[in-house]
Length: 317
Image 1 (cartoon, one colour):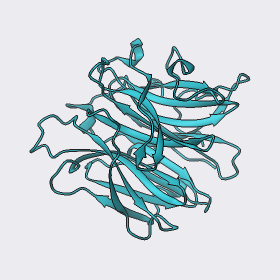
Image 2 (tube, one colour):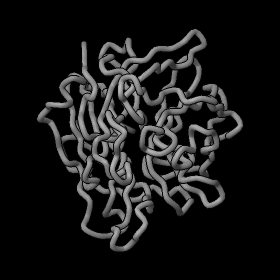
Image 3 (cartoon, helix red, strand yellow):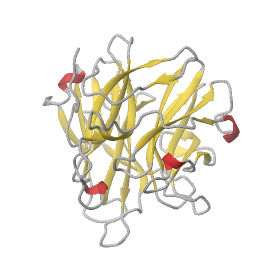
């Protein structure tokens, strides 16, 4: 199977999930930031052209979650579908764009492209400040919430927090800080840790994340913890001192990041899903440039059981 990158143009913050029904489900930020789009296909190569596309949710005209719909993620929990996303108040109410909070919609249908998506409200973190990029995962029969959050006592635009969940819409424990922007490559342009994604392999839980401004400086870092350690103990988490995935000037793939993980249908190959640009000449704020494109490539593991993402590739699936 060969897929040329970019796989889907003008789709940032991509999230692909391979379900037990044999379909790949895809969602991402759309350039208009006004809705949550969901599509599915039998093969990754068909996600670009599939006609199976719906708008799962469209922002209201006003209110606290009526603008800048960012980074939706689809999750299947307790036989129900959930999409977590960030949204901001209307800019007529707030001049500052970075006022996001996190919300969730749900759908009980077997196929998430069928049935009605219901708005389930805000996921309260206990920190009333800018937050985004929520993901969930299960470990030892416990559901965890992992997200990016600004905190008044921590320097930077956002850091990474984790908490146990009481339900798919409510936290059980207090937020725990597991990573903050502090290294040179995490603080270029902006002090940022965001876009966490989880993969469990070889006795460890790995969390990839993105750092720095959303231009060519954007790159991916890696956290990890032993699967037997307490996920809510900050000292148990370890951070790679160097970025694990970054701009390729040679191939002109700039600012790769905000990734998710999926697999080939046979489960034999792990796949990295991410967005990137193919130029650096951005006019104005990079967030408003629509040309962050969805890319996919294989990655491997070293003898110590750590992921080897390599360099961004034009064709590597």
